[in-house]
Amino acid sequence: MRVEISELVASKVLDVPDFPKPGILFKDLMPLFADGPAFAAAVDAIIAEQGADTFDVVAGMEARGFVIAAAVAYATGKGIVPVRKAGKLPRQTVSATYALEYGEATLEVHADAFLAGERVLVVDDVLATGGTAAATLNLVEQAGGRVSGFSVVLELSFLAGRERLEGRPVHALLTV
Image (tube, rainbow, N blue to C red; front, side):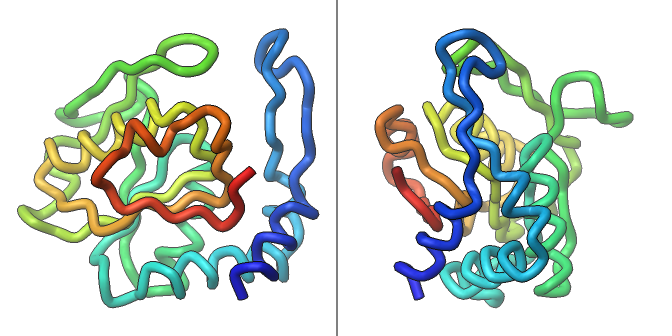
């Protein structure tokens, strides 16, 4: 199953050079999201790896992480919590600023997003340098949740993002 899902994901990734700025090779997963059966297989593989009984809620990172989180939440009957860019959430938030491979960003989550100790599966499309992931996992904990897992569709191992998440549960459908 692992080889099959890895091959399926690999067949749906498009390389976009010089996006969002010169020198960056963007890995576009929109073709995967647009292919219903392929997207369903990816969501099912995340759920199978994590186990639907190991989390209470799914957190997705802006913006493509929302797509995956919503699908995982729906398929498992769980709720979803968005982790947003700064200034997008209407109530009290906790925030984290971090470095990206091409700049800096701030993420926020509602301060009351999680019940104390609630088990949270965090999902995103790509693990690159690990800045977004590390900030999100810390935000989940600041807001009272307990990270039960972290899944991505694609891990860019040459950017060593997993190293920034040492000691954290990390799962990728495809690692390149």
